Structures are given as C-alpha cells and as structure tokens.
Image (cartoon, rainbow, N blue to C red; front, side, top):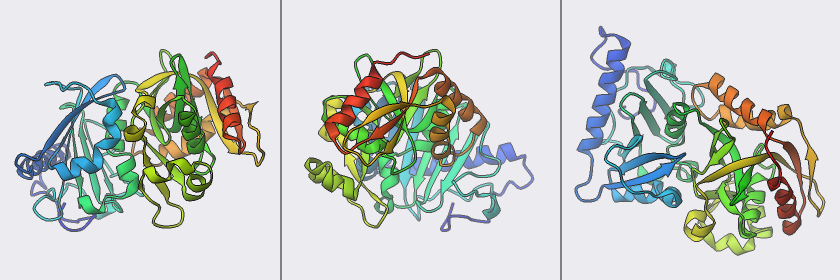
Length: 364
C-alpha cells in the first residue's frame, strides 16, 4: 500500500491465480517489516491469551510503547514456536507495504476486503485509522502496519490487534465478544450491551470493590465445553461525565482524555491495578446492564434471545468476516448461561452487590 488508503494499483502478477497474488503480497509485506526494524530497538514480547501463546514483535520501541502496555497482565515466558506471531511496524513512506492485490471497490465499511474475509490468508484495512491487518493461518503469522505511530487513534491503543486476535481465535473455537467481564476466583459474569448502557461503569465499580477484572469492551469467550471468558485488553473506557462524577479517584489515571464529544477517557488499569487483573475465569451468568435512574440496583430475569440481541450487533459489525460462526458461538453461550437485565442504579455498592448475586449462579 503506497500513499492512499484505497489504491487501485496491483501487484505485477495479473496473470497469476488470486491465491498466488495474495501469497506474494503477504511475503512482500513481511519483507517490508524486516527492512524497517530499527536496529536494537525492536521489541519482542510473549503473552498468554486464551490459553495460547502469542508473540508480538514490534519494529520499534516507540510503537511497542503505544500498542503493548494493554497486554501487560498477560505476559508470559517467550517461546520459540508460539501459537501465533504478530509483527507490527509503521511508516508512510519507506515502511509502507507494497500495492495490494485488491482495488478501491473491494473495501467494505468495517474494514473488510472482498475476497479476504475467510480462508488461509485474511486481510482488513481500517481506512480512518490507517491500520492494515494480515493473517496467514497456515503459517500462524500475522502482520500489522500502521500509517503513523503518532496518529494511532485511542480505540486502537485500547484494543490493538483486535481483528487479528479474532481471526486466530476462530481456529480454536473461541470468539471475541463486545462485553465486559468481572468475577472472583470461582467464576465471573459477562455484561453485554450497546455503548452507554453502563457495562463499563459496572466493570470499573466491581474492580474498585475488589473483584477481578478481565475487560470492559472486548473479551474472548469460549462456549464449549464450559462457558469461559478470557481477558484481552487491560484497559477501560469511561465517558467524561461518568469519570468525573462517579469515579473521581480515577481521573488522574487516564492515559488518553476525550478530545471530542462522544469519545471516552482511556484508563490503563493493567498498569495501575495489576493485582486485580485476571487472565480469565468460568462464566456463571450473562448480564444486560441498563440504567434505571434509581439509587438501587437489581437483577431482572431475561431470555437467552434478549441476551443474544445485546451481544450480537456490537460484536459482529466491527469484526471482519466469519459472522455465521460467530453467531453460533454467541448463541451457544446465551443458551447455556442464566441471563438477567442488570438494572443499574447510582449507588456503586448496590451495583456491585447485584453483580455479586449473579456470581452465585450456576450455568445450565
């Protein structure tokens, strides 16, 4: 990819099969990563994500300092043959990948690229953020290029490599879910819903009350053989008003403040609350938070279909590809778990107490 987010030029292999052109592009992009490693500054770190080893190698220490802190709570011993390797670099000029084997008309709104949503080699491009993601299932290798480390938006900093991690998870019967997760040593709860429903506030309140924290935006779920949730990102995002009014003790911990209406403050919880971070736990209930305008909080029975409707839209659209598989996994999760609306009140202690009731639930 040269200077525009949707180039029309193609690799000089127009007569070769599409698979060969894609393989050539992947190899050329990998060569660009190798050529742009900053001598002595590249970072290689290993993490345990969903019980599998993931090595992330950044071409520079600057890029590593932006993308890797959110995984700190999942740090693991390096392995020579990990389950997945991710190699990341940035740069608009010399660091840019070659022209891809697709054209401007092949881009979809959520970053999907026609012809690259499934199969051995997958690709997605976030046009606004300027981030290209490539994944080669057979090689267990992924590449991530950012147009500029200085312009990486907050949502990428909060959840780096999200698309790549989803592609990898699909090979192991796992699924990213737009949900928060908190719990204790014996298990936890998932909280799903649209932005503004209160799941982030409920998750942060639970952490401050002493519960373990696995995420507030995207987590990794495994419906079989036992419902389980794994942590991905050690961050939280809170609306400006909620941060100031409900969690004033956290205002100084924000690593990214809202720059415009609708944006949320980004909290690096993995750094400031390392002992509260959890790599994962069994799931005992699925909650659908909704603000009730009262002081007290309570659980109200919900159906599995209501829980699935809270999970699906904000999980599926931002994640390129494999919607049928994702639907099946999330539906299985909703079927197996007790489901409740969490009518969230303004009293933090009462909110955490209601979540505690759900933690005592047994799966179906």
